[in-house]
Length: 474
Image 1 (tube, helix red, strand yellow):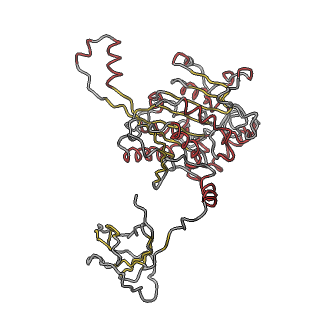
Image 2 (cartoon, one colour):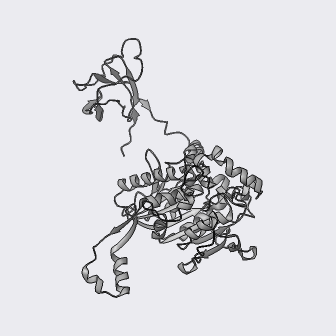
Image 3 (cartoon, one colour):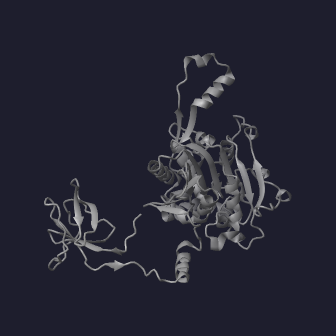
């Protein structure tokens, strides 16, 4: 990208006296219902401003009083559109390059939370998010990693992890930190946020046609949003039509034929990893599922009744109260099955690997059972929690298989909502990774530390990020 030594301030003067100011290289926006035309504009110094869209001007406010600015730098404009562009003859220089390195480093730390990008790491920023990748790769990365933030979060929450992914997997992945759901927009509900995320993912894929694979890494509420989004993006694409001769094949040959020529896709890409971090898969309703309430029944009942006042529709979804004025079951219960238009379980099954990272203790927002998709008696005993030398805060790992899927309940047995969600999600195998910050100074903010939301405050969770990367399937 060419670096300009100066930048120009500019102004558009309309026939009705209205003025629009702008600065190069920002292109002024001309609101109009008419089709735009293109005009070539140049300043007196010979600098080419490129082709700037021109159109009839629709006034947005009362025209300013006083005579218009006249200056010999007025440029030639389209005769069919009554406006002209005027550039200030005085260039505005960029910051002095002699600024000391110490002052620049300090400013950079304030801007990035003391996170330094490795030399050669490129951050490709667009209007909605940032993408991390190495620009000098021999070939463009084919594996897209979507990172999703949680409640009242933002794309900045995954900055450290995104940098580590690209640092440790150079030339392999491109990391996109979603920003379609941030701050107060995370109160809009899991379904609304999931639809926005699905649209954002499709936009990224359209910009990068070289992508072949896709993975998701999501924190807290973002895990539920990602589950909804993959259900929307799931499609089953037949790559080759089966011939009539296939009917004469044996059962094993038919199975091999189907696996070879029919591929399940997420947004047209091969799904690989689906990773959630401290995600309330079973919601926040139930005993000690929202630990800050200390397991007190009357507080938990009150929280279910008032969650929507604090977290909007997302609060209703988390506490399974969104069915009060609707005949449909709660959204989280619907998300453990397939429906006509949303294939939630089929989408999860399409991934090669599903992982649930859960805090054993000191997570005041999400309980251990709901984040690890277990029943109370299935939680590991304290004697089974063993410190890992390589990853100090990983205390337990459990790999389930298809044979471990629980038996179906008898038809006459009535199940509560939590049990139904556990059985629905256990239709697919999960890898469960339990994390404990019990001896860490950052244990009281374990919900953010497990993600390394801010390296200043949550650096002890770095080994969890490294464990995630070291076990990542490419």
